Image 1 (tube, helix red, strand yellow):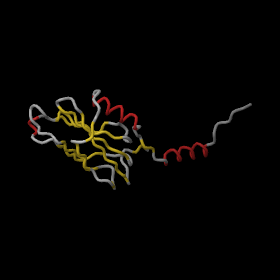
Image 2 (cartoon, one colour):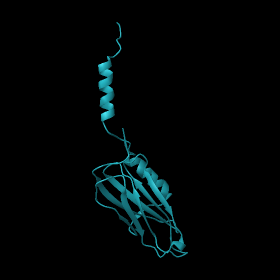
Image 3 (cartoon, one colour):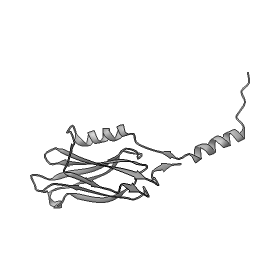
Image 4 (tube, rainbow, N blue to C red):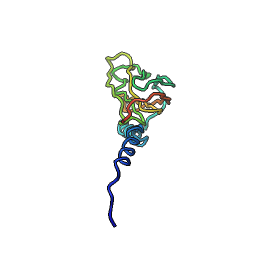
Length: 149
C-alpha cells in the first residue's frame, strides 16, 4: 500500500475553510465560575448591594460601557475592598479588578470592556468584613470582539 501526499487543491481548500471560519477564543462558563470562587475566597456571593449597569443589546463588542455601583457607606469599618468583573465567553474569565478603600467616598467604577460574544457578565464586590456581593447582566453582542482568525 502506498500513501499519497494530499493534492495542493485539497490543502488549499482546507486552509481556506479554516481561515474563513471565525473562532471564538472563549473561556468556558466553568472557568468563569472557578475565577469567581477564587475571588470570593470561600465566601458565598450574595445577591444585592451590587448594581451592574450595562446595555442589554451591544452593537460593537470592542467598547462596552460598564458601570458597577455598590451600596456601601465607605467608612473605615464598612467599605468595599475590591470590585471584579468576570465573563463567560472571552479568552480569559477575568475582565478587570478595582481596589477601593474608605477614602474613595463612593463605591462605584466605570470603564469600557471588550466582549467576544453574547454572554453573561458578573460583578463581584468584596467587603472589608469578608462578605462578597454579586450582580449579573446578560448581553446580546451583534459584532463581537476577541475573535481569532
